[in-house]
Structure formats: C-alpha cells, structure tokens
Amino acid sequence: MNCSWRVFAIESVFFLKMYWERRPQRRDLLRTLLNNRRLRLLSASMTTPDTLLPPTETILRDFLSGQEWLHANGIELMPSLSYFPDNFGHSPALPSLMRSLGISNIGITRIDGMYFVASDYRSKSQFPLKGSTAEQLQRAHRTLDFVWRNDDGAEVLCHWNAFTYFQGDMVATAGIIRWMGKTFGVSWRSRRHVTGRIKRYVCDLSALTLTPYMFCPIGCDFNEPIVDLGALIDRYNAEEYPETGVYATLAGLDDYLALVDCHREKLPVLAADPNPYWMGFYSSRPEVKQRPTRISRTLVLAEKLSAAAPANAEFRGHCDRAWNLLLLSNHHDYITGTSPDRVWRGEQRGWLDDAETAAAAAWKCVAPALAARRPRAIEPVHHQMDRGELELTTKYYRFRLSPKRGGCFTGLVDGDGKEILEGVGNDLIVYRDTGGLWRLGHEYAGGSFKAIARASETRAEIAMQEHEGEMSIVITSELHGRTFTRTVWCRSDSPFLRMRVAGEAKRRWTVTACFETRLRASRLNMDGPGGRTDRPAQKLYDPTFWPVASHCQVHDERTQRHGHFLFDTPAAMAFGKLGQAE
Image 1 (cartoon, rainbow, N blue to C red):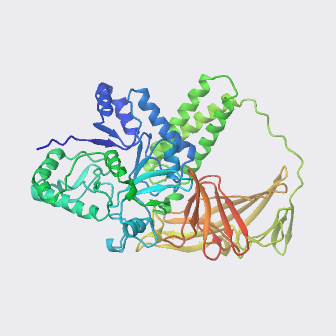
Image 2: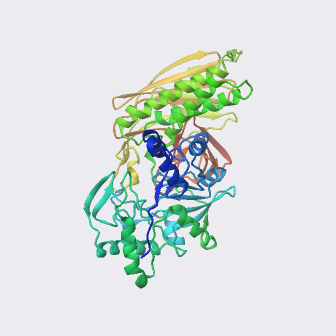
C-alpha cells in the first residue's frame, strides 16, 4: 500500500501571517513545511482579492505585499498560481493582471450561469443558464479546464470548480454539509460510503474533462482537515483502483494544473467574461468602495511626488502603513460590502479610518507647500426661469430642470443642438429588492426587483449657488419617507456635467439614478481592473447591471452618437433596450 502524504493548501498570505505573528515558536516548522511544499500557498497575494471593484494598483500591490512578506521571512516561494474560490465574478482582464505578476495558472468557482448549492429556488436541472459562461464550458466544450486569453493576447490556464470549491468535503461524512467549522451530519468512514462518494465525484467530473485528470477540491470556509484522509485514500486505491482504473491522490491545485498543462493543446481557448454572477454587491455599502479608491489615488500621487524629493523615512512609514491597511479592503468579502455589520463597524471601517489618516500624513510629507489654486475669471453660467423650469446654458450644452418633475432634467441639448434625452434625466428610481447584500431580487426564482417610486412623480426643491464660475444646483426629494439630495455642478468652460446622489436607502431598497436617453445600443464599452472590455447591454437578466471602474461608453450605431458616463468610484450601470441608462 502506498502512503498518501497530506498536502494542505492556503489560498492567501493573510492568515499565514496572522498565525506566524501569534505563534513565533512555530516559525521554523512553518518555514520548513512551506519550503518543502508540504504546506502549499495557492497564491502569494495578501488577501483573496475581488477583481471587479478595487483599483488595479491595489490588486497588484496585494500580490507584491504578500510576496515581499514571504521573502522577508525566509520563505522562498513564488507561486505561479492564484486561487479565487469564492469570488462573485472576475475581471475579464484577469489574464493580463495575472501575467503581469508572473502568474500563469488560476482556479475559480463562481461564474455566470452556474448552479451553486442553496443559491436559487430553481432546480439544478435548469442550469447552466442560457447564454452564460457556464453553458459555454459545460455544454459547448464539456470541460472544466480551458485557456483564458485576454484581448491583448495574455493567457492563463484556468480550472473551474463547477461543483463548488468544497466538492469533496463530505467524503468521510454522511449528512448535508461541513461549513464554518461545523458539521451538519455524522462521521461515516466505512468502505462503502467513501467508495460511493469518490465514485460520485468521478461520475460528475469525468463528463467534463478533456485530459486524463480530474480535480475534486476539499475545503469549505474555515473547516478543519478531514482526519486520516490519507489512509482513506490509500484504502480506496488498494481496493478499487484495479477495478475502476481511477487512482485518487492527495495533491494541490498546482500539481493538477501542471499535469493538465501537458495536454494544453486539447483545451479550448476562450476570451471569458464570467459575469454577472451576482449584481447587488456592486453597490452594497458604497462607503467601502468609495474610500479605498480615494486612499489609493492619494497614495499613488504622493509616491509620484516623492520620487523628486530626498528620501524621507517618515513618509515611507506613513505610506507603508496606509498601503498595508488598504490592501485588506481588496478581500472579496470586504470591498464587496457583504461582511456582517458587526465586522464592518467593528473592524473594517476602523482599518479604513487608519489608512486614510496615514495616507493624509504621507501626503503632507511630500506636498506641504503646494500653492493654493488661484481662481481665474470664468464666464458665469447663464440661467433663467422659463415656464416654471430652470434653464441653464453654456457653449457646450443647454439643460432644463423641473421642480414639478422631481428636479429631473426635462431637456439636455448638446453643443450641436441635438437633444440627448428621450424622457427625463437624473431621475431616482426606488426598487423593492429582495436580493440582499449580494444579489438583486430578479436574479433568482421567487425574488423581486420592482420599481415602487420615482423622484419624477413628486415635486422637489431646487436651490442654486454660484462660486468662482461654477454653478451648483441642489435638488431635494422625499421618497417614501427618505430624503435624497442630488447635486449638479456645471461650468461654462467645461463640457462635463458633474452629479452626485446622497441618501440612505431603506432595508430591501435599491435606488438608481436613471437617464432616459435617445441612444440605442446593444453593447457597452467599459473599464475595469486590468483593462477595458465590450459587454452586451443585456446578459442573463433584464436589467443587467455591470460593474464599472470609472468609464462606460455607449455607442449608437444607427446615429453614430456616443454617450460617456464617468464614475468617481466603482459603480454599477445598466443600459436598457429603450435607452435608459441606470
């Protein structure tokens, strides 16, 4: 009988670093296990980062920080693999991001259109959803392994855990699930049970493989290892391998992908956009998305300015502290806004406070004497009241705001004299949404995502103020007992209209800002971490909200007109068939 060595894999550096700091007496053992590859790192990143919402810079530094920590502590590992087992979607430019870090292999789980246990009331037989990445892999190519190629030619070898990232957790248990350190079942280590489980895994996986290898992941959230798993595997191989020809071994995802790579020519090459998996988290808890973006910009600019100044230890200390705290926000349960309130209030918000303070201190070290901006003479924005509506005019546009229509735009004419709107603009729509923090209600059977109120249906208060050539218009609306404020800024010397919405949605509400445009488009071009991508306006759901980093371009092929929507921080945008930008 062969002896199966246990291989334990960690998906990121964060918890390893925490254990290292809390158990100094075990550092030599940890270092030995890691360098001998008995303890594996499936990624050198500090966290398991979301790749849809954080700034590109913080994602790249996440990996840099983890790698530097390893080397500083004598752990000579440079993983060429990155594992994203629980991310709610992935950047379509992920191959470019990974190859820039020297990573050639990745593992993922949650992709659009797949079945995931307990996430939908629909039966498993109704998945994969039509038009999804899951359908493409399961039905068209019948594989869980593929070469993911970005539009710039960057490639990674990718494995998809179609049967969850904890498919094999119940190999020695009879029951429902092992999760968060709890077992909803009983230990069941008989030959019949273990053999039956492994045969079930083989049945599922063998239908979706183009190589001689199959990967069955073990390890749901915070579970302990399965006791004496090596002995169970050895028993299975001794008794079943001669009959089945299937040999089970304990190995890491890195081992598996190294074997699959030997059969790379058999795998399909895909340009994947495995989204939307869930859409609600794109805007859940917006503060946790806005602040990391601002902090990152401050730090990057401060570092650029520091390059022209003498070395400053104080600056470096503030900068390092800010980055170390900020990188934690990348985590796929942090920046997504899906952590429990007690974690957000008791831990994450404090980290952002400290990161912001450190970033501000770093900024003061390199830019203490920046001259204040000198106001320059700017022609004031012409405005007047016309038939009960406020009309403002610059050489770039003319627009009208109606107090009776909730302070919405009732007209928006560009510099060529062409009307942009079909109906109203900058309207607020309140949806009753049963989706929670992760999803929108119309993403699953039995859910609800229904419009229940619009700002344009009630009167709003409008106030104006002009300062140094900039006109600000503040619109105050009441929606089902909640106050929302929209601010519009315009300048005579700028072609941009700047807008902000402030307010707090009730529980089970989603609020959108809507522009009913004359544009018609079936595809959208938008940016995200690692690059830009073209996306269909509708995919799987209507409306389909997409994550946008800072810019979305809408191109109307009929009229050759363009609409440009710019975002100061990560946001979500949908574009309807009738030209509604939400």
